[in-house]
Image 1 (cartoon, helix red, strand yellow):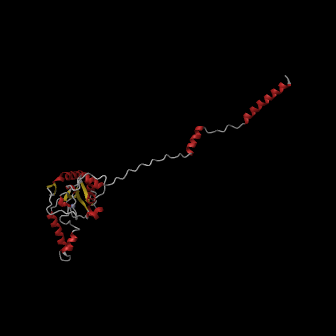
Image 2 (cartoon, rainbow, N blue to C red):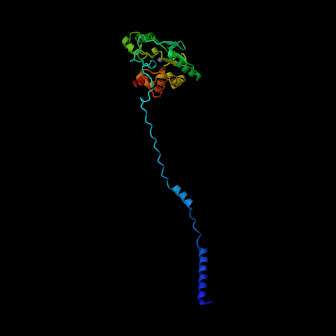
Image 3 (cartoon, rainbow, N blue to C red):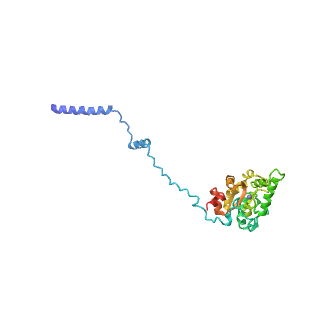
Length: 260
Ligand SMILES: [Zn+2]
């Protein structure tokens, strides 16, 4: 073996030895995250850009006049009666008896009975304290009240009439003359004031359901400034379309008629 070859072999052996030694002392490979892991970490760390929430297109608020029911405000069932719109002494509808010796306009017997029957089905007892009241009866009640106030001479009769107007409707200004209004209570005990019966279960039920039968809760407390009356027991027929519209839009009859 020549010296050249001996050196080459020795060199090769040294290289192999070096490789073996370096392999044994090299540190274990550092565990690196897999691509998947990096992705998942990135997914957690990077705050995703939120999808822009689509802004709902606001429904245009319908103008209260745009959705008015198709009624003729001069029809019999929408007739407005109050201190301004006064019935003549001769106004008298064709009436029919319902119950408790009370009469109403014959055209509302059916919806009224349907409402009263529905109330009874809920377990309520139903008493009609007043329905149709002729002009002369209204006059008797009103002037009787004025005379009672003036009795004894402490109050001038003219002043007594003004005071009576706040307690009893002046003849011709009562809806009861129309035959379209009913005062309903749960018993014949009628000596109660409005605040006492406001939360009577029967009246709460009627106030919530009267519109289904074409009636409105005519004189609620929050409309007293307009109507002049607060009577939780007084329900007035106006037909179903108008009743639903008025009750849902919190309008009294005066406000409703003003829209036409
Ligand atoms: Zn009444």
